[in-house]
Structure formats: C-alpha cells, structure tokens
Image 1: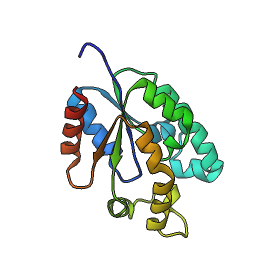
Image 2: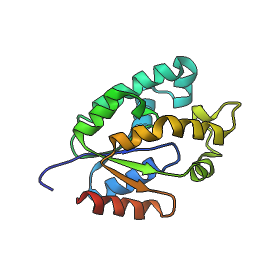
Image 3: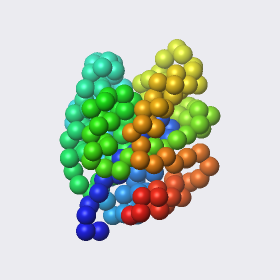
Image 4: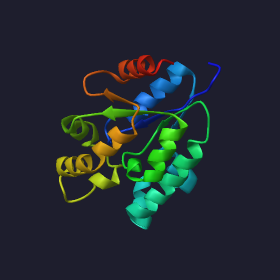
Length: 172
C-alpha cells in the first residue's frame, strides 16, 4: 500500500467498534487505536473515574484532544467513543483525515452487548439501559450518518466478516 490511509469507526456503544477495528487493523496491517483506551493510558485511570471526577464535559475535552492527536497519524484504524461525534471539531477532523465508517446497530443488539459491562458510565444510572441507548440514538444517529463515508450494519455477522465487508467497500 503506497499511500497509508486511515479508517475511523464511529457508532453507538455496543456496535463493535473496538472488536471490528482490531480485525480491520490486523487484516490491513495497520496500527489499531481505541480512543477510550488511549484516554485511560494518558490519564492513568479508567473512563468511569474520569467521568466521576471531571463529568462528561471534562471527559469530552480529553476525548477531543486524543482524537485530534490520533487522527494526525497515518495508516491507522481508530475506534472512536460513541459520543465523540457530538463535537463538530471531531466530525470535521475525522472527515478530513480518513475514511469514516458508521457501524450501525439496532438498540436490541446494543442492550444485549452492553448489559453486563460496568465500564460504560452513561449506562450506570437509575434510568434503564434501553431508555439511555434510545435517547443517545436519537441524539447521535444523524451525526454518525452525517460524518460517515460508508455505513455497515453489524447486527447479523461476526466482527471478522464485518471487517472483510468494510475492506471490500473501501477498496483497500
């Protein structure tokens, strides 16, 4: 591959961005990054702690900086946080610096994939998970669609199959 291009994965929590991203990176021999893991690495604390101490607003500031730094690299696959698209700057950066793939997933799959995960601060509330996920979908789905070069449904296939579909769609 003469020209190293970036692939940025966007979508809701539970869409499979990290898992599919690892498969993509492996198949394409690119470096893989996960913006949440990078935030944890830089802060030395988990995402839940950052939310507890700094709130969602403080977390989003960190997330924006991490995505700014990571998107300056060449030849990477980046799994972004589900809420990162709320920032116009992040959306602009993703669009300008790589191919953006929206991993579309129905609410039912999100609920099933996130129900036992205690590492998702937005789901650790009194409100039931389905209601939270539905609210987030209504706020974010149009933003995912707006920023995406391609949309891939992740509900019926394995992560490896979805990664292969993405590779075919983008022509790598």
